Image (cartoon, rainbow, N blue to C red; front, side):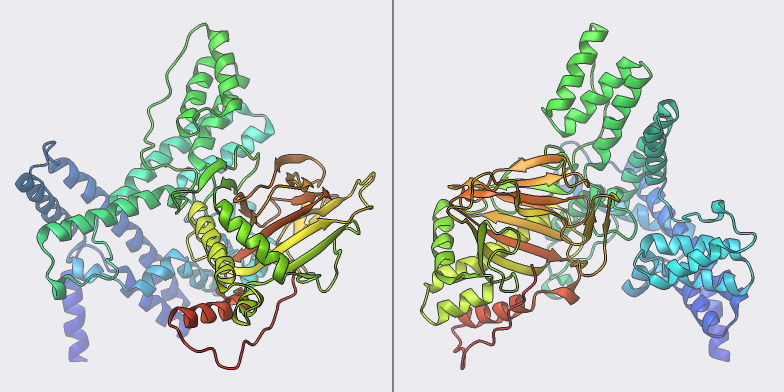
Length: 606
């Protein structure tokens, strides 16, 4: 008891300004398990308030200290180091003046993750439910569900709240909604309804909130960073090395702000082209209300992000002609904005992004492989592929006019081990697929590791004598993780679809055949939005959902070969054969003996 009094006294002294949110959170959880729902609400709401205040205070302190201690333009060694240390001291003083001792507000990674995942709102909705406050329970449940859309029980709870007396539509609010995203979503709805004047106001508001959020995000990057693989106390790095490493981490963090601001809660990848879309919507909305000066400025601003885009260039020419003069784009901060992440390899060339392919989450790349590598893999395909492999033994699974042959990575490695194909070629298939995975993961700026779901070396060959007057497709229009329903304009994410697939890619080995173009369509499975002609080293990548229906036109002459890849963000659905292949490669790299052979368990799932 005496110890508890001392602890309480210490805490009250050190947290005179703000109670630490991890302590409040722990109290709320304990109250929940004691069925003390009044205190669950009291402590959990307090924890959320404290969490938000810590963030606001850090932003304010960083911006204040940045203004008070600017970096000298000459960046002389001593002046720069002095400014760095002065800023650090300033931020420490500022924080402690407003929050109390910083040590009290250091929280574990587990608690941080709980707040990022909005776990407190799960407790709150249950507590408010027990306290017969369904309106507040509905708001908490809705807030939690926005970040956890796969939570089945919470989805059911929300449906029940909708039927409760006294619960109205306005009670279903996202308490953690980010102002810039909320305004943008509302603006898009008004735009689609034809209310362009109101949409303009909200788009402009969304831009203001976006740049405010960008400043805040970058400010938070200047607090202590986590240095993976570094232990400064042990290795005794010099001051300059510590500062250099810190600012390297800060720059990386600031670059991630672009993705963070475009990322919706509960999503693993950001909304593509997010910031430029504001200016695209605005230029057309201003045009609709005959404000051509503003329309021209917004169109020119969009071109800062996507230089030379044909449709916008046509609009700019029209606005200039109508106005009789030119204008300038708005001043925006685009130092760290990218519509796609790095391509990882120097040789890889971006051909078309999503906008050029008339869709979302799409990319077309060239030179992913060299001509020599394409030739090696084609020879490998002729040696190892079997008719019907990957198609449940069906030689012509999609059309009777073509023959399909395939092979997996593990099967190919087994052929290499047995001396039936050069091990160098078998290893190339493994390495090329990993190259493709890294490019897709990087370009789409994913927040977590992309895993192989299925990897297939596949060739489709036109059957001689069956090509006259063909009007079918080599592969009918479909989506990779849902059941396409063109009549309902829906794609149902349910079995037997491979619902765990998140991204797909096709890496082509050749182009010496007739037909066989890869096509994207609208949800109606008829309107073609983009067409890709295969060639050696060309890769098309895209998200696997209903936003990207696709298919393959008939191969009417010759043979079309490609490496087909499907990826998942869920490690539970990693490709079993790939894990076995990883072990084989590891054994090869360490010059280990393989034992009595390979345990092949091919997955038959195209």
